[in-house]
Image (cartoon, rainbow, N blue to C red):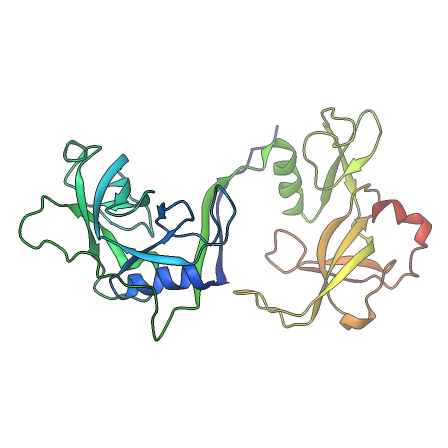
Length: 316
């Protein structure tokens, strides 16, 4: 039984979105230390605001200012903050219904410990020192007893600003530990030996590369290992024209589905050693390995005649 592998992985990318008039006003208001909600046709005030009534689906545009103070409606203690969270020390996640609002806003509450937090407690906004038009312009909430330093109440702001925020860029990130399991661990270990190994279904006899440990068609376990390739056939492909972040490959380049000889499932790989506009369906290719590579760096033309369409049409 081969060792089952595991590795920490990170999926991260910047997410860019434009803002409609309601979200634009809300985020611009935070930049200006103003909290805005939106009023529904039945008189409720929603904070954070939305563009359409969640009950009636009516379009909403009537912006209204609410107070920077409010009441905790529910909470949960975060004893170990993670990277990118509002505070670096333990804090409470809270839902706060701001004064003048009918819905609650999720944010962090800076408190010395869980014993200092309760449903119904009064809190106020702590504004960030530098604000740019984002939810992080509210640094957090803090306990508030109505004493000195009482924040100013609503001034009747209508949501009109001279320099509104029109778009935001947020970083989406997922950190996790991936374990490929028995079948894929064997596949990856074979690749480190410059071999490609799949598994054969005992029922339909198809060979799957990379293997998943079970046949996706028959639903039965697969254990019989079968070495395939190393050469294969391009079944379909795409031309990449946008350069990926942290990927040292000049565009345009081709990414293809490649049916390795002996396999009944195409895997994907980059095609090199040929101009991108000469790649075609049926092209016969072979793997190219770097000196320390644990998988093929790319595939290049194998110098063989193109495969007939009938030989790979079922693998498209």
